[in-house]
Image (cartoon, rainbow, N blue to C red):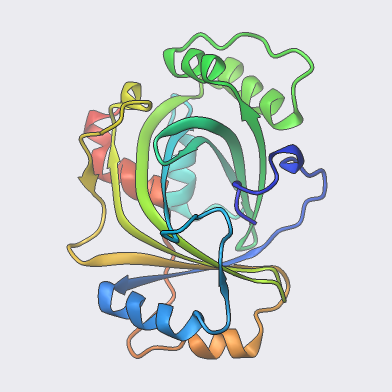
Length: 243
C-alpha cells in the first residue's frame, strides 16, 4: 500500500513483509506495459485526473554510511529512514522506515508537521513526546547513531493497484537526485539523473502471491528483474557532494 493511503492508519504493529520486484524499462516498454495492465488494474485513487504524482524523498544515514554499505554488501536485514512529500507540497509529510529481510520489505510511517521536518533537516531534532513508534525509533538513531539527511531523490510515479494479492504496480520516470538536502522544500531542485537517458523503473509489490494473469501481462522480451535501490544509486552518484 502506498503511503498516500488513509493518514490516520499509517503505522502497523504487524510485521507483514511484502514481495517487491523491480525492472529497468525503456519508455516504450513502460507504455506497452501500461496498455496491458489498464484493462485489469485501476489507477491509484490518490493520483487525480493525470494519473500520476511527483515523489520527493530525503534519505538519512549515520556518520559511517551504514545503510549505504549494507546495501552494497547485500546484508540480509537492513533498514533505512526517509521523509517524503508529494508534488512538492508540505502536506502530508511522511516519516517512513523501510525494512528489508529475506528479500521482502515492510514499511512503517507516521505524519509529521513542517516545523518538525525543518528542525530534523537542520540538525535540531527535539525529543519527541507521545510520538508514534516509528518517530521514536528514528529519534533514537538520530541521537545515538548520528543519522542525518544525505540525499534527496525525486521522480514521477504512475501507480496502479489490483485488490487480489494487494498488488501495486508503479512506473517511476525521471528518477533524479541531489545532495543539497537543505533544498528539500524548494519548488525546484538542481537534480542529477540517476538512469541512462530514456530508462525508467517498474516496481511490482504484492503480499503472498502475484496472480498469474498479472504476472503474464508483465512478461516482455528482454525485461529482467533487477536489484535496485534509489537511495544507494543516488548516494553512489552524488557521494562526493554529500554532507
